[in-house]
Image 1 (cartoon, rainbow, N blue to C red):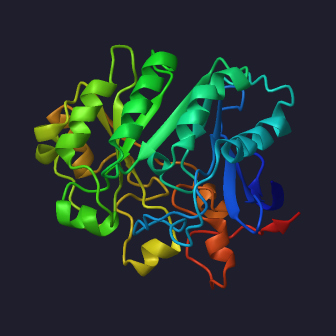
Image 2 (cartoon, one colour; image 1 turned 90 degrees about the vertical axis):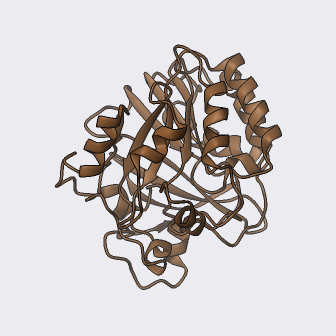
Image 3 (cartoon, one colour; image 1 turned 45 degrees about the horizontal axis):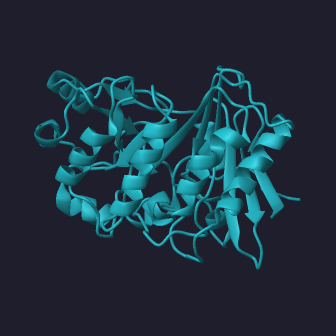
Length: 315
């Protein structure tokens, strides 16, 4: 692999454009969460595919699909990011989070399971916590079974973060946002009940919530036990795809509303733990947030309000 370009701020987030070979370009990211120092929390985001066949309505990393990455190609991204900070592969961060979320739906690539099975031997990182987010595509039951086995064998007692990307409780709108066959809420809930064990982190139901997209606490409560599942609501990050799809964020990315949103109150009254996750707005300008893809910005785009303002430096 070859690093061909980068953008960002070392004190917040850096995005790297990687040429694997034959002009197969992917991206990987390292980030911190000011004012928390890297020794407390360090986050890596790596790609599992070159492009993505799903094409979610808010994600710039969809389209131009050129295949799955091998385990070695996923590891090459992690190795690069780690070596820059910790050449001996000893990572002191109390929380060292590896997210398989830059490009690609991880359940569509079996090599991700091989990576998860080898992480602990490859890096000396007591704070390691894989973070796995999925839209739950239909037909991937074998992958999900193996994932459960690996988590139970290797990542107990809160060492693994699992998230379903849901975005709305309205089935029709969910199909518009995530335009592929996927598990229904009953299947997601049943798997989550098996996945969760005492001492684990609650399973996250993530909503990158757009204006006019329903999030009904009663619908959730019909399927998802608040003792096992929590709700995370994030702003809809500025992307070209979201703009083209006519989507705008329900949550103010500047945090002006605090957590004083009616839906947050309603969910908490239903019994759910709710995380209103509003990160550094600077990450939107860098292009390091979820759903953003710097190469989309470079491919002849004219600019986007609130995102992709940092210079991309060729290396």
